[in-house]
Length: 539
Image (cartoon, rainbow, N blue to C red; front, side, top):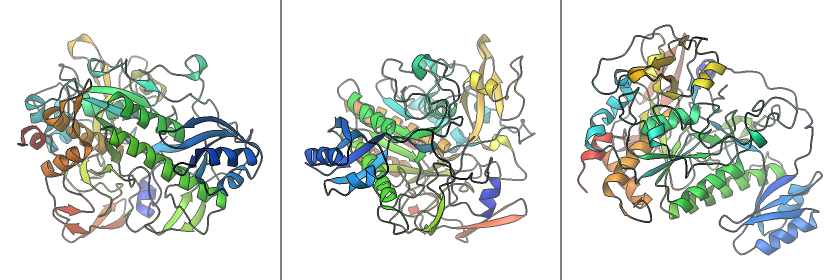
């Protein structure tokens, strides 16, 4: 079940699937024992001493990002360590994020709304690729195997018939260990499928990461669909649990590894929990809570900076909270973990959504098939860099799954979710089966800024393929140059008129205010990413 980002108004909350009342606070079955302790520049030894004074032990040190892995027992450990001026943040080593997609399963009876088209067998269903000109760009500039696109997500089904040809198994890594139950003894990832609960690098037990990877680089092979850049390589940088949640350390590890091995572009279709908005010094937060948020802000920024300095272009989903991120006022859903710890607190623009509002990240809002900003998509004149198709089932009369984004899905995930029957036939419009060439493969419709972000990542990969210079086993193109070209080739789109756009659905209305000019505004940023322009623009 996907959890939609907080900040939902009444209409968006109504649309968010799986909403439930928060559970009462409970005591964990075991105390938190491991922490990430981030220290100021040159203060490693002082931080180690602070850990020792607090009764803890330094387990390891990451000098690249400036943090200790420390163990400590008992209440007050984090506060005691955080009192030292050498320490800038302390976070438990636990889940911190959730993928930003919205499933369309079972809600839409109409599976026939698609356009006949040349190309791959299911190309007619890919309104998203036509919107950004990727259907034409595929032949002109499909990318090159020298370009590596890292997918930091729940994993990638590297054996999927419409992904296997572009999947780099050798470089792929899994940075997480499945957790059958959480610290309260409740189901988190479920039973482990692999020895030591460590899935292989070509496994995705959620489906989210496979969908993202497929949108970026499903090959032109006469099967199913084609991605935005169908000739680049996909590297699985798994940082998400089977359940869709993310831990801080795997996220840091994935980013640093991406920089170290020469990944060109990274896609991050998730947001960081337990704080929807991370505030460094919110007066309503305890000292412990402040230290945790500072650790997330600092740690992720250091990892992002490290990767970017190594030549990695960073692309992120903006979020599904229907929120103007430039004017957040109240956060009612943080901390979102453990369940039941939520509180209402006043916030302002100094509180950020990570990684979407972190420095050096290209953040992407989502559009429906009409080109309007999707009702669920976050926005903001300072936050939206570009926009891309992410799907919007409400963009038109009634609701249709075909207004979402179609991409590859692992068969075993669909079976487990009850979306295909015993004979392998889809049970609803949200799943599509294609057996062209004799090998059957499955695809599913999803919507979200998670689906918009990989379109931008794919266009970035085209730009690196065209303008990158031969480097150490790859093509090198500075992230600042990729960003400049991405903005230059984007199709500018002005705010709607009137700027206060009113969404209508299920008898309710919701208004989002678009600020900025045609060249840069809160709904579309610098414009809608354009694969065709990226494939044809002169340097």
